[in-house]
Amino acid sequence: YEKFREARSAVELGAGCGLTTAVLAVGLKMEVVVSTELEGNLELLNANVGAFENVRCAEMTWGSETDAKNALPSDGEAFDVVVASDCVYHTEAMGDLVKTLEIICDARTRVLFSYGRNRQALDIFMDEIAGKFSRVDVSSSDLDELYQCTDVSVIELRKL
Image 1 (spheres, helix red, strand yellow):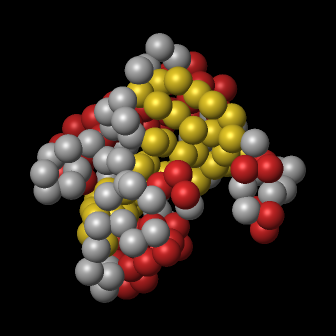
Image 2 (cartoon, one colour):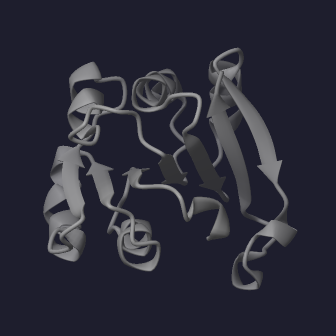
């Protein structure tokens, strides 16, 4: 948590039911948290986290410049923090995912990706970020003891 105390805005890509969004909004007390999902999943996401004052749920189709720009905080600035979990499994979507990251990030944005068993497109994702983002593997010892496991990896990206 300490690394994110100064962050004001965050976005969760592919938020699912919104658990990470809730942690960002309530646990880290981010001023602005945007929780994104495909249109068909927004109803559940809104039901789970839409009542938090600092959360906005938004439709996000990766690769859509309109969706990416609409997700940005109201000041139009890039997010301080981007989080995504288990988003590197669909080969055809990796180029669009990186396009979205390029729109919502700047050089100061901290991008945290975690992935477990669903990493079928990881190599393609890494190829897509080459020359656009730097990558640092997060050591499991840097994670809370509860989340240190051998089948989940976390990486941090920074836009070049």
